[in-house]
Image (cartoon, rainbow, N blue to C red):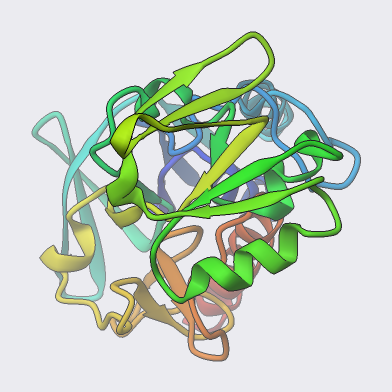
Length: 277
């Protein structure tokens, strides 16, 4: 019987494991090896680690957690999560594992616009977050490939950073090619636009089926609804990271720092729950 099983080895899950380890709680962290930022080589806007490779962040996190004997990290994929009385069962390779609490840190998967060449640039010269990737295009032209009303807001956010901001309807972009120092957007009617980088707004979906399996309450955006400590609509189940949305926030917070904070708060709530029980 584990005090907690954490599903997901990104920043939210790793921080939850670290916090539980420091409180000497028997914890299992399951890491599938699939990450939303797998194509990103430099993560930004994280204090003391601005510009670090996300893979290196995960390596360092796992090494730090290794100092705490009550935490086990297993490279494995969970298939189901179920509630059985006062316990939760996580199935891994047909093996049922029991826990008092489960922290879902499984993140989301981005569905990119169907523009040839775009996926090859995703996470490098094409991004969705100006806080995480905007500064790297400072003083150079950028494109916002988005036809929604939010495109104007994003364009204005980038104005102090870029030399020019071009808002482009995705329907006009026939292909994206990398150049020596940026991107070339091949447009309809034979036109093209050369920029340092581009921003898009991909649609996203939960990377794991557990919220649906447990029939957890979700927000209008499709994220798991939680309180400020990551508690979901099912006792003993917590959700943190990109696929979770606290009730006091207008939407999911897609950032490393927010994920780390959420992981810590959920772990604190788990400890308090164990003490109360």
